[in-house]
Image 1 (cartoon, rainbow, N blue to C red):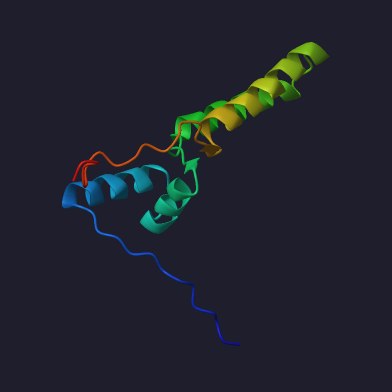
Image 2: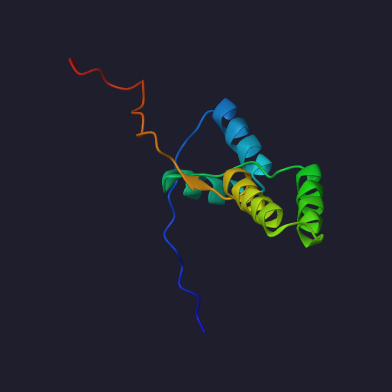
Length: 108
């Protein structure tokens, strides 16, 4: 079965911009193409949390398994969901796109 070739988008950046894109992509655990794709589609990928974050989540999850009250368990589960939402999942940006500061001026 023949694989259909996907169209590419090519653009030029400065060395400084390339290093910044590479560093940001690595911090998010993504390759540069995926990082740029997510940014272009309006997502703001988040940096991969440190191992301590996952260790904390495991401890909190274990706490939920303890025989505490239903209210304590509910609060702990709610906190876990909030931590995941805020720190792990990419979110849509809420700021409008900022036009490029350089380029031709309006008066030529």
